[in-house]
Length: 398
Image (cartoon, rainbow, N blue to C red):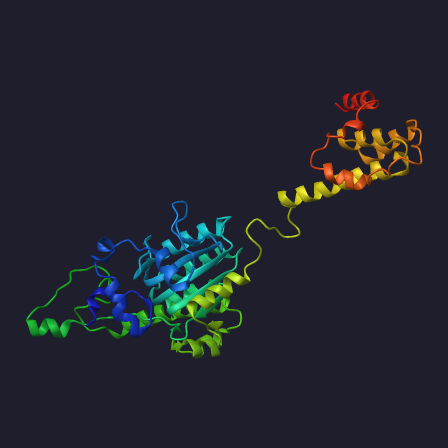
C-alpha cells in the first residue's frame, strides 16, 4: 500500500503507476541506510561496457571507449547530491554531467535512465544544465527500462534517446495531491485547530476538505508547470511540437509507441544501443577540428616532411653536383634554409669528376632518408675538407 503521507503536496513529475516506487524511495531512513551504489559494476553488467570506477572521476567510465555514464535512476529529487539505484539527486546528475563534459578523456556521454519521475522543483533547470554541460560531446540517453515524467525531462537533454523493447517513455505532465484526512479524524474523535495569520496560511492542510478557491490556485500552479514542461521538451526535441506533446495528455507509452510518435529515436537492447553509440563516436580524444591548431603529433609529421623536402632540395639540385660533401654537410649539419644552402653550394668550387669506372654514387635521396632521423651523422668519407667551412657557417648561425 502506498504511504500517501510520504508524498508532499508539492507538484510532482511522476508517472501514476510509479507512485508506489517513488514513495518507497522517499522513506525517511532511505538516504542514510542505503548501501553505496556501484554504478560501474551495474553499467558493466547492463551495457557490456568495460566500465570502471576511478578515483579521479565521479562517474562510471569506460576507458576503452572513452564513455562516461551518468545515472538518472529511481526517484529524482531536488537539493540532493547523492546517486543510488533508487534515488538520485538532480545536483548529482548535474555535477557528473559537468565533470564528464570537461574531462578530456571522455569522448561521449551516456545517460543511464531508469526512473518513474521525481520532483518538479529543479527538474527543468537541472536538465538544461546537463544539456549545456555535455553539448560539446556526443550523448545518448539509454532507457532501461523507464523514462517517465521528470526522467523523460532529463533524457531529452541528450542528443538521442534509445529505449529497450520492454521499456517506456512519456508522462509529460504534472500532478499535485491533497490528502483529506478529516473523515478519518472524525471517526477517531479528533479535531485539529489552527491559529494562523493570513487567509491562505493553512491552504492544502490535510485535516480539512480542499476549498474550491484553493483547488483553483493549485490547478493554476500545475498548469504553469505543465506549460514549462511542454516548452522544455519541445525545445530539447526539435522534431516534436508543443501541440504534439500536449496531445499525448501525459500518457505513458511503450518503447514502440514512443518511437512512433517521436518521443524517442530508437528501440534496442541496451548492449546493442551502447555498441552502436561507441561505433558512432568521432576519433579518439585529442583529435581537433580543421579550424583548430594542428596537434603535436601532426606537427611532428609535418616537420618531418618539411625536413625531408629541405634535404632533397639541397642534395639533389644542380648546385650539389661536384659538391656532394658540402651538400651533405649543409643538409645534415645545419638548419640553413634550402635556398640559402643552395646559394652556398653555387659559390663553392666543384670537385673533379670521378673516373668513369668508379662505382655509381648511391641515390642521394635514399641516403638522406636513411639518416634523416640522425642529422649530423655522415659516412666517414664525407667528413674532411668541408668541415672548416661548415663550422664557420654554424658559428655564424649562432
